[in-house]
Length: 465
Image 1 (cartoon, rainbow, N blue to C red):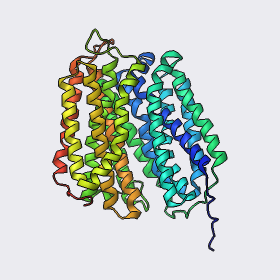
Image 2: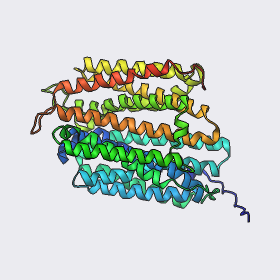
Image 3: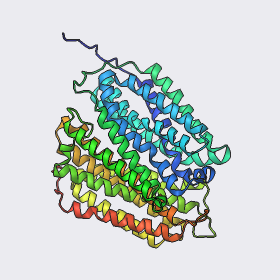
Image 4: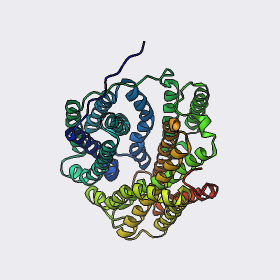
């Protein structure tokens, strides 16, 4: 029996505006940790490695929920799934706001990670309710407001945390998320569900991938301590191997795998994943180390920057990152992905090496961080474009999921590497990390990024392979 679905109800500017407000609120909530991470480490007595884990918990959840959210959106309707995701995000924001310690704050960040799947759902909803031309404009508006919200969060997190408390820097954007979600619920009509996928959701693959990523992050977060605890290290290594082996076996047999490993065997796809990983490792080391360096006392080798000052100093990098996407897209169309990725990798490696050699003035750090943000945006945009144009249209989501998971793993490994280096370089009982820890981190990140050049030279020069 064939069911005829009712056509979607057209929406007006008010509904699109509500989605934009939600994008601003989620962008702000997502961005509050980075500029205030040194403050959180002081108030919660966290090691640098634990701080690094806190900085990537949200991204890991996002990588796991995004493909599932898309499937649920097609099956049950985008608005319905979006509202439920934002309920999870709101709970996570409130948990983060009242968190007295690291475990509770990590739980809050893990729940907040559901917001990563919300933005694509917003696009699904807009495309269902608007004609093609208008939907492109609306998607651009929502995307731009999300970036704007991230900049607002970067600037406001420090003043709110220092004037009120760290609790309010999570509470205020969470309140905005709740109010804007209620507005979306009121103004946005329900969209009809699409045809369900008979293969269903790859729950075993999702659970095994969650265990694999969680174990990997635990190993990296506790790396400095594990040198003296070989038994714990052995248990974690065995657990990681078991999760990885089980995940590979499940994904190879699943009818609709979360990550299609057969697609990963194609040269253009694995090259895109390798390049994404090394670029994101380099970027993430800088994203973690730069605020730490800015916050160190100025009577040592830092700059004594407050959380408020750190937010303003990180703003140029955020602005450049927002511009890098369109620039990367234009560059890829004009010169091809190989040229754009090569230029970005060279720029990032040189910038990281420059930070290792020269970081005695604030402008050295600000300019270096901005160049790294630009290089990352150029590379990621070029790789996503190259991947999307290589595969058939029906496989775009699968290929994008591969790149997305690789991107998150790269960011997580880079942040944990930076945290482990600072933890190892800090005298027992606390104190200031040795300056050589920062130098080593930037040098390693530059060397890892330079490895991208070994892969880019084998890429096709054109826009597709």
